[in-house]
Image (cartoon, rainbow, N blue to C red):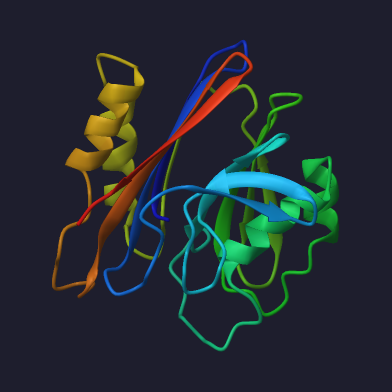
Length: 216
């Protein structure tokens, strides 16, 4: 849930790739699943701890979530609901704006939620800092790079951004390779936290595909 890139074309096609940096002990599905939420099908990997997910696509949306807001926060459980369940609630709405306005985030841990509307090609980011909602419109941007504030400082975030800005080739295989090269390994700063998977969602015209790569 911790490094995301989106390379977009003017026609609405995109490559979204996400590293999930998480405790190696937190269980998740080994394959993607298609599930139903309030009568709507969505496809993505499943967090077996909460029953939610960190990324998925439905007929209307492509969504992913990162831990934390703009700055590192103190983890203060218990929280009312997992962020991996909050992102599913977008499917209750047709418009991102309506979801942002109506979603109750009280007692939810800070997060950054990246939302792509497949119907109108909007790309918006909801940031919840535990007190206030912030909405960013990135609909016209060709490249979005976001890294989790809970695991990466400003210098590391800038390094990630520069790596993808300077890549000499933009295709799914190359972007996946880079994401794997910058994966989080075992380290003393965050014991037990590693990149447990890389997920890639590719839209090409009316076709959308999801590739899920667990990292053992």
